[in-house]
Length: 359
Image (cartoon, rainbow, N blue to C red; front, side):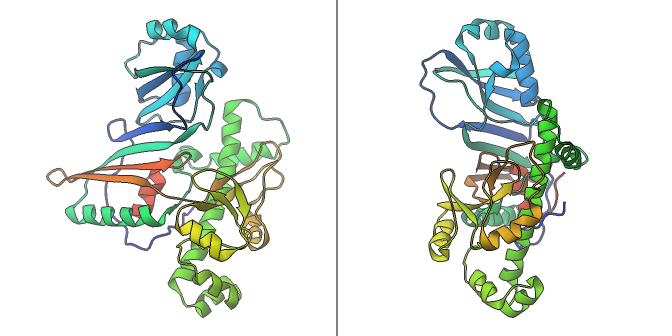
């Protein structure tokens, strides 16, 4: 897909490569572990290894079934990552004895009354090294990143979601429409890629609408979008970059309950204060849809034949936190650190800065 960027700076040039020595990720757990209980919690550093491969290695070392190994989220192969894994406590000696690969290092051991489940994390800390960053590019990157820290960014799924050719979602669509029950993790991932593709297409359209309103007169924007002038005026009066519509599914941020937008003044104020964010549809069964005007914009990207997987909603707009920079002018190298909420992609943040695809 051709992504619509939310900010209007000129493209910024730098060299990015997702490698084990230039891309570091650390998982932030949802809660502190009690350090007692029947489950062993391992804080693991791994490099050049996907989460699925890590689970396979642990399974072989302990003779556990893979379904008995808990993890909160998937981490990339082409990176150095720190994440938490849970196994039954009685297998502690086995894993200490048999986990011998140099690609895995156990940093810390704790215990818990419960296993780790998918989604049980706050977010991730990233440290990324960018090369070929001129002094001027360094200034521009830091300036626009600070602006995005304050105003937020669209929460697109990253290119990693869609396979080497960016077309895995087409296989997912075919599987989803077959009417058959999904078999195994691969088919579920492919269907999930199709859900993600539709979400990205919807979000790109919403960002496009917001850009038109932000950069044109009410009369011109009304003509370009075929929207009533009164609606465009209401949208233009919102100070936020991403324009909210009546019926948007708003959710407390970074987690909490959702509600349909009915009061523009209240919702836009809370949105600007980073207390709530609009959500987009991951179509499927048993999930809420937007209402009113927001539903009209969402319906185009809602595959209502998608019954094989449960649907949900995803934050459309997020905020990066804890930005830090370290620039070495002699090497034209910038180390860029930041935090993103769970499910968000560091590469999406970088692409919004660069205004180009990094794949």
